[in-house]
Image 1 (cartoon, one colour):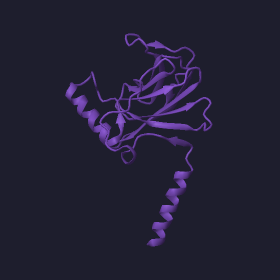
Image 2 (tube, helix red, strand yellow):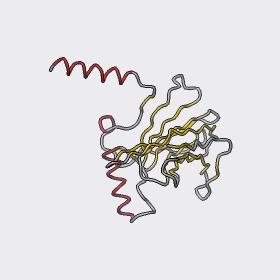
Image 3 (cartoon, one colour):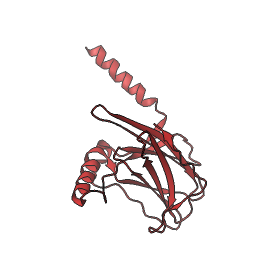
Image 4 (cartoon, one colour):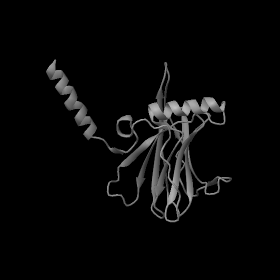
Length: 191
């Protein structure tokens, strides 16, 4: 019995060491209970990048790669989930957000600061398993060069056909306008 337990621990340790991604996503052990995600302010020297999901309620994992980073593996930032804000009663959306954020570390959006002029690659994928149903789409990737003092929205989009998804990048510096960023691969992919 002790040998089996020891072999299991060794196997888990080896699997954890052999990852092709870095993970800086929040966890209950590292960050404790969080009722809201960490926010980032836009300033004159950096860009702000917001990552969200739209069109479905499955959790979406986001990861990034920054140009010039010595470690070019993707860095997992965390998981977002559309809580239904604007689609269901406000109190239901707030309850969904509180439970998802505090318990599962799934936030309505993730935010990062980005260096201007350096390419940023954003990867996203959605996976979930329920009672007899399994959903998987992605990863989809977009690469763009942020500009100083701008705000960008990277949106994972669930398509009408449940087996496809996409990702689009918008300039949302003016909150009243969503301007698509030119030359960015949307990465629509079948599941």
